[in-house]
Image 1 (spheres, rainbow, N blue to C red):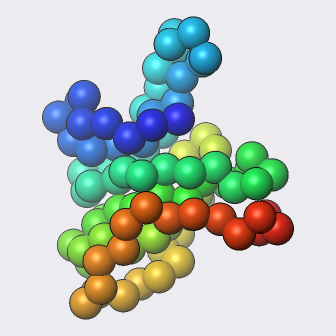
Image 2: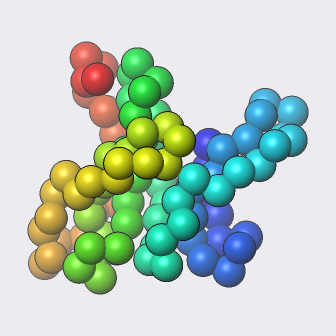
Length: 88
């Protein structure tokens, strides 16, 4: 999993370990980047400006669905999310 602007917009992508099967899992016109898997591998935390035009931390399923804003702090810019070791 990685963040890239290869499509002309910053999005989150997945791919196989051999570099094949690259797939975009975010398709929002906003900035989506800095993805990180949860410890159990069922969720992804990432940074996006899709809600208020400033960077917030979001969580989504590994297929890119059900994204929701976790921080919602329009005056603070969040970057590089991480999970606690016991987080699910």
